[in-house]
Image 1 (spheres, one colour):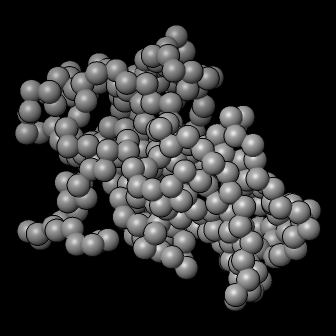
Image 2 (cartoon, one colour; image 1 turned 135 degrees about the vertical axis):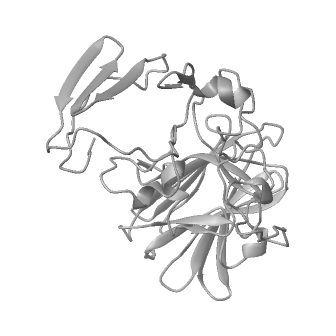
Length: 310
């Protein structure tokens, strides 16, 4: 906390992401701040001479606009989870929200807040248009391991793409197959595929390239992986997830979750606010919410419309 004359930092509690309810209370009286987390209590005296603060009339719960522009924050991610008994002084925020008090605003991609307890185990990324995608930098040129889960109602989609020294590779879905296609140069391509059961909602894909070997695994262990040996190509500096630059109109229209690149699990709440998002990409629990209903889509009396892929 920083009241203008210097910050006070501390860490309280352990395993607060254990999917259990936790009680958090913060009180401010003159220069004294008290923080209660479950049965833990901590007290702090703020530096400086000021005893009073002018609080912004707009108080945000569980997030806020443009967090990445805020100084001092340890995380720029909005909260994902459940809340109950939210009070500001003696005002019950959730009660007033449910009563449609005009002073309390719900801001989110869903049209209405959900007044029920919902377990949020994973946050999927929605690609509403074929050209929508994200990209991630690659630090290694000799190997890559990429895994994700996806679902779609379409029968064709490019799922991942990257350029190599003089060509490119793609992972694509074609009806009941997941294919890895390597195009080392113009007029030459190598293809391996794995058949999978399309009746399932979510499908798991893992691609591994190292020491000249490609291994493509789909919904393991039900399906036998596809492999290529004796390969030798250099990866460029990024991988595209959800589309392919060579066939952008055949990108994924659907959702992905648990995206992992070279052992790093991609945090959707982080990547969605970076330049690594291209086109319309959303975090809407895979509900394909109309982009025009999202907060702050149109300002100053503008009119929103969706045309083709934007």
